[in-house]
Length: 126
Image (cartoon, rainbow, N blue to C red; front, top):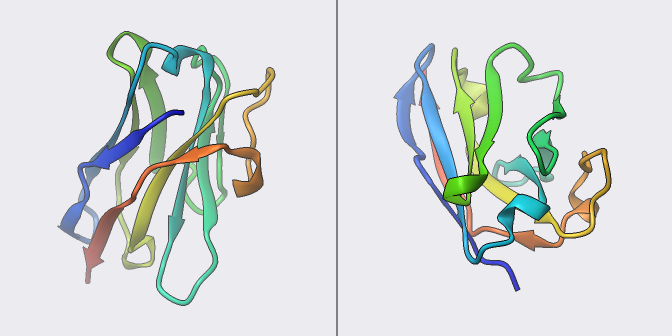
């Protein structure tokens, strides 16, 4: 079983930046596609970004494209989400997830992922 721990969340002013990290246990992180999702209270969990196991293919939700960058460092068993030009509507709990059996195309919906972190709160003030 894979354990994921998100970090890097916090309070930031609109227009600011944060970098989230997703630390994975074990030595097999490099074999997993990774995704980032977010969920605000009372709202459904929504897709944010995804990256293939090698890092060669990425996907972004339209709402974050051009502002967020997903990346990974397999040597460190860590994935990242760089968030720039943050908006109040980005406020949510952010979760990382991995797909243990992905192919060439990382999933872009929650059911495609097998293991999830506990989440980290991101709050963007006006």
